[in-house]
Image (cartoon, rainbow, N blue to C red; front, side):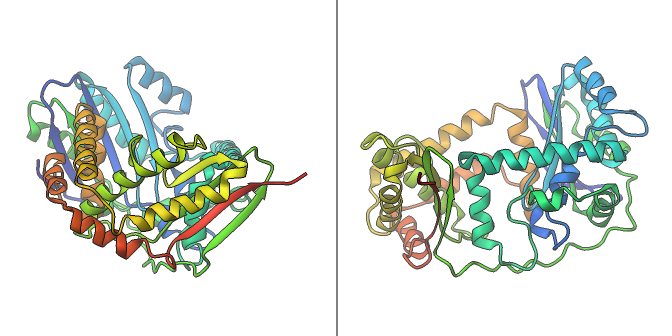
Length: 397
């Protein structure tokens, strides 16, 4: 694999995967909720919702859907705090069709008033659904609790209902024009492609002419971590729900592999400490970073979670390390059979780090992780004064 730069600055990576029928075409753009200022909260997510709704060439969402269905293809889009991505997954014989279709969708959306109004309603209902169901929405709320005092950034990606319900076409289009910059765009094609150079030329054909003279630099984000140690919410729920967490490390920190092993040992699978302590021994619920437990066990479950986090600084066994590494290798190996895993893996790293790596290279780094390094990281992160808690408690009659 290599990174190729198109004439307009778009970065391109072709990932040859022998033996796969499927090919995934995915476009990544540096538009995310982390960069939203006051008055823009939720607009990255709103803009993503406007994809596949029609272009000048394809008049409506119905036309787009009919064409994609005729190819037996699938498509989707997703928004995070640092990027937004759009993909089409199809058979390799349809590669050029998929490239043309996705370029049209991403670069030439109509964003009609009627579609903005319709999607505004869809998003509002989506936000209300997350708010009504702590199992789905609590992790977003926890991000907002942790980092919501920052002057820039919307930490619950969808935004708030009161804000989103007011957005109109002018604001959505204006936000897109500000930040859709070809120099902050990556196109990845992953699948059984026979001629990498030919695919690169196709991508140049469909993405290489796009320019946006109105785009500006993303704002500089300075993250402020709340000094509060907890936040309680009372709702009509049958279960208790909680999140426990700490401020982490940067994505390019050399200790990121230590952290991955630490996460698995702590709560990453069904043999992890928290799963065993809270689900298997006590039958209270399933715990990761977030948990739903019996209402009368909420406080005790949080105490156990914090206790196990702190314990990681001095008690990790060689058996746990071996099991965690084997788990990571097995899960990664299974994922590598999918073209969309590769497009996501490569696209994220090129867009956010401007570097290429393979899963095998990262697994080698995982293999090098030792007990000492994991304990040291746990001791730095899981300090009682740094651990934040958020919970939803049932309203009393």
